[in-house]
Amino acid sequence: MAAVGERPDSATMLPVMLDVRDRACLVVGGGEVGRRKALALLDAGARVTVVDPDPIAALAALADARRLRLERRAYRPGEGSRYRLVYAATDDHETNRRVAADAEGAGVWANVADEPELCTFHVPARVRRGALQVAVASNGEAPFAVRRLRQLLEHRLAGDWAAWIAAAARFRTRVRALAIAPEERERLFDNFFAATVAPQALSARVPAAGEEAAWIAGAAAPAGATAGRGFVSLVGAGPGDPGLLTLRARQRLLAAEAVVYDRLAEPVLPPDLPESVELHPVGKEAGHHPVPQGEINALLVRLGREGKRVVRLKGGDPYVFGRGGEEAGELQRAGIPFEVVPGVTAGIAVPACAGIPVTSRDEAVRVTLVTAHESARADGSFVHWDQLAHDPHATIVAYMAVSSLANVSANLIAGGMDPQCPAAMIERGSTSAQRVVCAPIAELPAAAARAEIRPPALLVVGPTVRHAATLGCFAHRPLFGRRLAVVAPAAGLREALEEAGAEVVEVPRPLSPASRIVLRALPLTGCVLRDGDEAEALAAEPAASGARAVAWCLGTGTAARARALGWARVVELDTTAGWAALAAAVGRDDEADSDR
Ligand code: SAH
Image 1: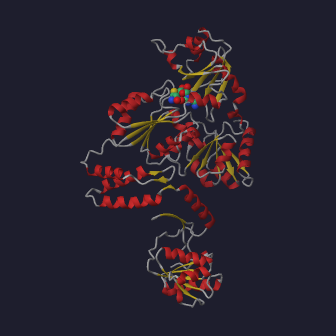
Image 2 (image 1 turned 120 degrees about the vertical axis):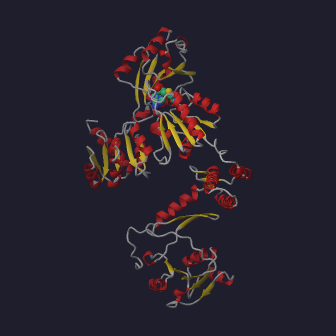
Image 3 (image 1 turned 135 degrees about the vertical axis):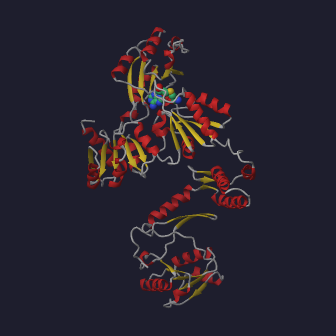
């Protein structure tokens, strides 16, 4: 058996919950620390003896109230061996050591306050909610970190967890009384958990009696009756900036069993999506429809029939030029329950990111969201460009505008629009790849062609477009255009990079399937690597270690590792100056880097 304090580095302590009810436990030391230990033991139902020649009054009061036994004397050698659990909390190292040695000799677990090397057990920090206890520990190596984490959890665990755990215990008793198969039992427990716990908010509620009854009645129903539990959420992913995903969208994604997603939605998939989630790319790019709409509809229906929680993730808002209405209709006809989680549509957000307010009191009192794609219809467009051309106090936002731009421009001018009317094409708005080209509507097709604007891009026409020059602050920040991968957890670093204008992809280690999709969704300009292990994790992903990506490395060792792992461009950064200085260094060095 290893001696006290000789735990091999690789060994972590075993967490256990001890039942000390009616068991004899000793606290040596009757000061404030001893009192706290005694109270914790009393709370757990132990028979407590405190030994101290001169205990504090609070302990004397507990003894007077017959809650514990108090021996007003010094510790007697050998005494510790008669107890189940011993705490030493004196300020005399010799006594503490004696207590620990007696305990160890007799096979009794001992904890010595502030002397971790003498302890055979540590007491975790804990968050309590009734019978529920979350324990936090660090093998005694970083108690300060443990305390802060405990406080964080204390705040984050919202709602009525104490009542929830009591309800869960009651529910378990009821379910165990049913004569059902173990899988069915687990399904009921799943129901209970899914319906009562909000994973993002870390909050819990007690289910109503009716809800519990319904789950239990469901379990008693004949086999097959459980089909149809499936549920499809048609979720808007916003314009591409992951920060513009709604809270509900993220909740649905993290609770999903299957995600069916478009190309436009790839950058906003949560990299921490659990590995167990089925991923179904049905990517649509302008001009290409790799998975025909009929097949997408059929896939949604099939996944729903399999009883899965499905997220259909679509760029922007699902009902704005997204065929979300068709998918909803199909689900409705198939009898599969569904919902819509609206998203931030590109037509409003993308102009904003380019400095263009789509309405303005004195300039534009109407916005038209229109598809430019229509103008290519052989049977004649539904869009009456000539009517739109006549309103000088309006903004026109045209989706899918790249291939038909010349056509739309000509139609508007032929319809009577001033050829000098301000207009813009915005590619990949809201993301690190955003590009904006502004020109009068007559000249925009040529300007966009010169700039090689590619889908996805929006056309914006109207008087407020002229504000792009002054309000387009999005692109002015020093790290704008940089898309950087960092390994989670990256708080501090991530904020500093984002504040400087970078888009940050925070990926778990090892890389999850979702995080690989996100890394590849838009060009990555680099990785910020804090140590060799992070370099290792990202080197395996071509998108992160490819020729165009710079490895920004903290410290010489990290840089050497990145070079060894094959990064073509490695920049070493000073680790001592703090995150904000590091973000500034990434901007500076990148400018100096002429082949960017
Ligand atoms: N449902 C989406 C639109 C889908 S149609 C929404 O509400 O935004 C696809 C078109 O949306 C693209 O061709 C492009 O015109 C536009 N679009 C989507 N995201 C964009 C972005 N980040 N930047 C520019 N245009 C975008």
